[in-house]
Length: 294
Length: 236
Image 1: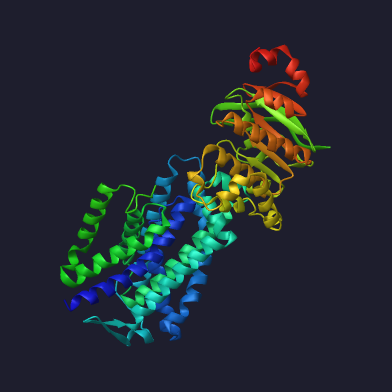
Image 2: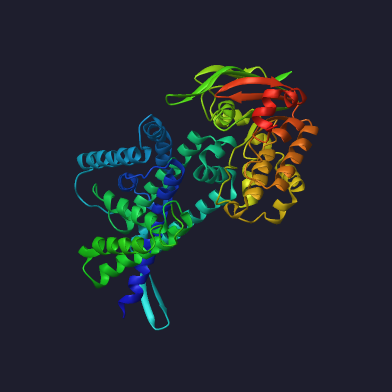
């Protein structure tokens, strides 16, 4: 029983990280109709950017996050038109084209990273890594490392900012309009290419920042990407494709499943369990946990 | 003065040619109608004006400027609004969010408050349902949102694609009442309809389309007494 609160806390923190990965992934799917299988590689590249920047500058990695965001957001913004071209040519089945293209992109990034950054695992040293909090209440007690707590705060902040951006700004109105009816959004004057490029930029920036955070909390390596791609995909499908409001519940569920497996059972079976649960839920409710997906 | 002028516009979907060198003009302040049966090319005509379809030949001018080939959002910036067939609302937005989405562009944003009040004044029903999701509205209410959203754009030229389609007779009356009112306020209107009788009554000038061509034109009274139109569209 002593481990239960620990497992729950870890699960919540992992879940918080999955939320931000999955929200960006879901947003890109909603606006651009691209299932971005390179999401894990954007995370990996961000993690390496954080790792090398910390090594060179000795600045606290938490403080590097805004810089990493800006650089990667700009890269994503400039990169998006290429994806747009792949999808909007006269090729059949743009959804499949997007999937294949980003899958290939992910492979390429991974290969380049293994060539240039090597095969080793690293972690990003942070001042927060040493400290920890001792939480007690109701007969349970658990320790929470401060870096994980910082991760939770970061995830909540990003989710809050994205929520505000989408629900309370005209930019967000345009994004939602595009996701819900592309032609009608155009008639309202929403510039599809520009808005999509902004969305992709924001998503790449957030994914890269999250990569830095993962490098601080867990570890980073050139081949870390696919795990996170799979988890992002899991969360988005479980939440219901394109149903953003379902993402937090699905992400926390994944985080908690994963941490329970790590603590109580064999971590090697985590993926097996995760997919067994995904399939079971999709069998019962094909449009996600809440039945509100596409 | 001609606001909108199409000259020899053709358009195709793949190998199927839908528009065959059509020409028409819409003058400022007039209500001009485009009539025709299903599949005549009326919707494609509107789409090729607002940039959702790129004409394969010919030009569309607005205030003397060539607009054919511009992307859809650029045409919207010029003050051309389409109230599309089948409403095309944003289903997961509330009524009010749908209306506000109409004022996305800078010019319309400045008048957001004023236009919102106007939309609710024209359709008091929408004010009651402002927080309801668009997808849960009835067809008539959705059409009101679509028209209200169009008005939120502060258009100089507003185009309606079959606004009375699928509505009850009472709501058809309501939609025509609103269009007549907008016309009296001086708005330039281009109306595509299958409800020939009602349309002939409010239009200043009409074009009739068949198989992608404009086959007839004239003012409402002339067309109403034209034996071909009477036989084909009015049924007597």
